[in-house]
Length: 433
Image (cartoon, rainbow, N blue to C red):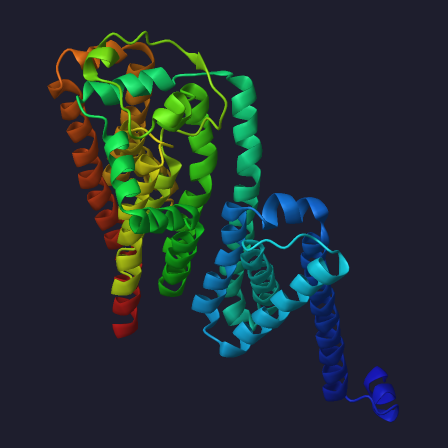
């Protein structure tokens, strides 16, 4: 009876189904329009914010962190049309800030305009993508936003660390570097000042750290989603875990300790042997040991395995020039870079969630990385005079830290690659059956 009634009214079952489908589509479109509008409004609001512009968009590090969103978009989408949208959006944001809001122009803000526009385009593409493509784009969009947020909160965490620790252990780290009988950071600083072109390149690489992070993550994302997600988690947790270490052994770097004496007037070995090693009052960010710049580029290098040669070449370039920049600017002691090896190994092992926790390679990597990092922090805090017994002791410990870290890194990545290939082999076998 009901069916005949609907038939008389001209509502056949097929037409009812079509009407229901159209209603669902209209509702989905409305949600997508709403999400797109909200995201674009959020981007514009950020660009127009006085605090965000002067504290973040004009900042060298944060502007490049924002700009790295373009790398993610370019690798995932590979569309010239998207690039045109990014350029147009960046010009609109710049016009709003400089013509309407009349903010002071900064060169680095240009990267921020491009980055914000790229985030808007990537987010919009994610919202309107087909279900089979949306997951890939979502994996690109969300981590890009989180990485910018991580960079934004880093300054507040470092300010908090400085307020909690007015005195630093710089003399302890300075003493260790002296126990090597050569002040490597001073020598690298002199070398860079004699080769200003190289110093400029090293500083650009130092500031441009977000670029290889985005490059390697996005490239791995196109290659294998699960592996890429572990890479981004490692990139993200490195900052907070590093801050924990900064609170255990707060230090600033040799240039903050000796000032204008860096790099041309290093103290003599005899003076360093008689140094009264005590905590000192210093102004500056407590972000020396472990060097997070070194940690990130090590993560970039190791996780670039399997990617294109040009990506690997860029990763190695960042490793080499980061070593020069961290030492040559006086922002880090040599021991800061040494500690980055086991620290980065620990982070990688911790974030390799696709491997079972009972996996031998993962467990060994984590235990050695954590143990070596904590041992260094303890020895530098309480037994720095130990290293002055003989230069063999500090040099031997450096070798005993870096060499096993590299070996365990290789074993961990090899085990992870083998683990990832197992499901593929099973699927292939099943298909063949």
